[in-house]
Image (cartoon, rainbow, N blue to C red; front, side, top):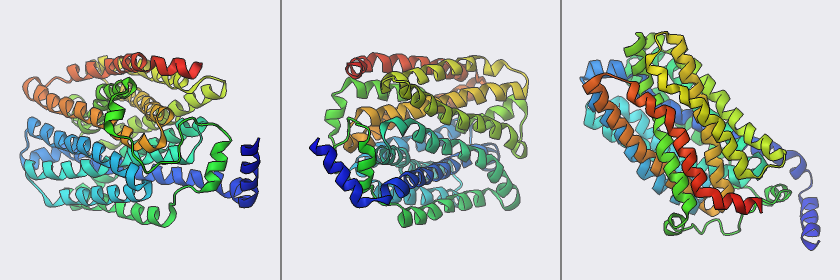
Length: 433
């Protein structure tokens, strides 16, 4: 009773801010996360779109290209561990700013290089910086949004990855064909500095009024010691950590495969050249955008019907996993737009899967551990991505066949969901109790 009275008194003291400013501003924050994620994916996808002309002009082999992609994922893996810890220590405002500053410099630096080694170094640096995006964004969502809204808000900001993937094939070929491929890296790299200025100007840590609004729903995982990070040893001692990490290990490489190898697949299988890449890639990533928002909406809608959060997240992930399975047949389809429809469905399902997987972390772990945990799971996913990318390059160089990779795409999510279910059963029982 006393707690309720204190909350009411504090609410009266901030007055209209709670009713008017806060509900609007948290969606402004979500918008900033959306645009950062858009830029993140524009920067990382430039090389995939330019892969064929870069290989032709600079003489890269399939395995050389695979090693360049692997270098990004190695940097991303290390960056996930470092950035997650850093953001939990210094906060989202500073941590996010440092991350986007590093990745924007690295993205633009690609335009100065030519060799496989040079691109590998730049890709590694880009990976380190870009690794800050999801730990910072998911932690920001946990700080600003009550649990019932988190999956939907995560789906919204995560849809920026698809918008970035849509914009890149529209903008990058235009720049490259008119001013050269180097300018494609220079100009897209500059976008991050514009966002950085907006972030530093607008963003502040949520104040007492945010706590009031979030207090309307008991979140169960908030604490007042957010700058005291949780040691990795404590996180690794939890079976849930291993379950979520191994699920990322199984499924993250699939998204990397779409980003970096899909333009090459469309060229090899369907004869799609650089200036014709836009329409099929735009269709695929627009579908992914719908999947991201729909996946978050589905679990949030189930929670509004009284489902506890973990059951709702897992149900949405099961729907996503089933929708990916037809990818097994993608390499055998002869029609371009039939293949695009199949890949688009799989990309949409991946994004619905991802937004719920991210949200499980913010549901189950204290806020002071969210960025570290996202980073740790991202490390697992990046290690899987390295192995998948290098293997893809070697398989294509030796056989020219995409069917082994598409088979793995089709089954990975069901395997990942089985791992999550086995590792979080007790957590689910505790929530139900």
